[in-house]
Image 1: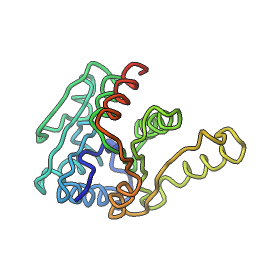
Image 2: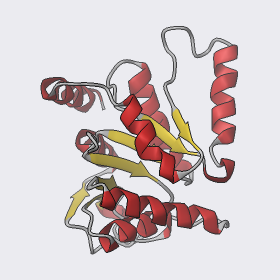
Image 3: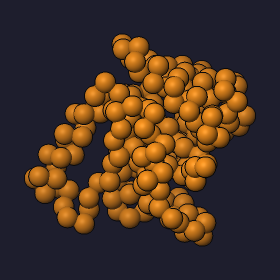
Image 4: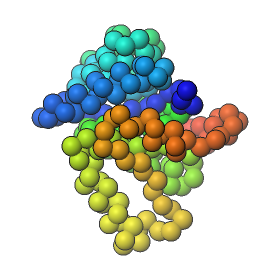
Length: 202
């Protein structure tokens, strides 16, 4: 029985040019639904985002889509979600995604996916939260980022005590076991306090 109830997944509004990216989203959506883990994501119905959300719903899972109003047309609001939240802007969207998640997973995506992932790494690095953060390195998609983080560490721009705790798996089947191993034993009061701190500083 997983202790993770909700995962925030960052991923592309495009599909990329390798079918493995879309297929990985489809498989992970099924895995989430089968383990009764709610998906929190960007609320669109296109690209990898749409594939992931469809897979969760198709296998009886729960979806919360959080999308800013100005993207509801461009990213085609996902109508099948049990819960949809339309926000005023990106800042509110990201805050709500953070508050509702027990862990964060990044599938392949573009600049928006990278920005959301790096923001969570930054907050974790600065001690604002202890929720696990993982990249699914499908077809080595995230390898350049992993190399860059190692480069920053070697040059001491990521200094001792400010380590970046990024989990990496090569397949989506390994995501839940990796998150479970990394899941901190936090009381509910600490989770709420962390969320409040991030809300104040965003």
